[in-house]
Amino acid sequence: MEKFKSQPYQKFLYSHTRLNNFIKVSTVAVDFLYKSKTDLKELSEHINELILKAGERWTPRIIKNIEIEVTQLKNDLSKTGIIWVYSAFDVFFKQVEGQLSGFFPKSSEDRNDCKEDDLEEKKETKIISLYTKLGWSLDNINGILPVLKFYEVLRHCVAHNMGHPTEKLVELSKSEDFQSVIRNWETKYIKRTISDPPIVTNETLELKPHHCIMYSETCLRIATDINNRLFEKFGLNHFIGLTIKTHLIEPSKLKKPACENFSRYIVYHLKQDFDILISPYDKIYEYYSDDKLKKQHKSRYLTLKNIS
Image 1 (tube, helix red, strand yellow):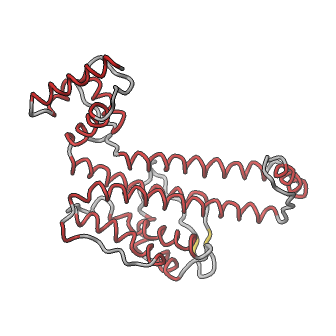
Image 2 (cartoon, rainbow, N blue to C red; image 1 turned 180 degrees about the horizontal axis):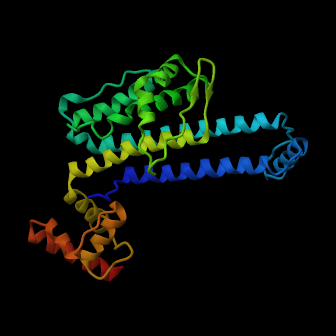
């Protein structure tokens, strides 16, 4: 089911799109403002005027060294994006992990005794652990795990080390695993190469806006693989059952649109909720092995439709 999208995956896709818009619009807005005045003193005064007119309780702020400030702004904007991606992917992971936990071997419960400072060390391990417990091959994601590891450690530097690189980040940035993945990264466009990764030295961490989008793209590729495997694990009937429960059994009236008949109603909401397409509509009846249950559901549909 190529187009299937679980609820956690839909939320991460939305976050990925919002991040792209936020980073790109914010970046061009900063550039547009910087280029709005040729004289740097006039530009500083113009920014101060805009701050005063922003509708916030802000006092005047004269910005010196505007060229340096623009570079720092983009770096800080990128840091914000890094935190955004980490949070979104962590939410996705926890939600799918919860959904799939019923398939875990009973003896495989994880004990998370690590400290907050060690979480970036565990992230890649958590992904691998999930695949291992479910008997999934890592072939589809193994080639990008070094990039995930790099950005997870980078996130730790941003969140817990005021944006200063740690020895671990410097080590990862120079590793052959990371460099090899960057050199061979498959982009969406043929003959286009990936942008250079962040510049990491013992003293500095230089980020650009596209780096957090790269981080999000890395997480998206892993999330896509997990999403596809989640569907294979549960199967179509599981999601048909969820749709029937959500839109027929639990509500006291039909959700709009009520549609022409029962099969179209369930097929419509299956598409809306999970991007699963059933055609023709009557194929939905293959879900039922019990004619009595099918009649009950059709009867409830008609009853609710009459009072909706």
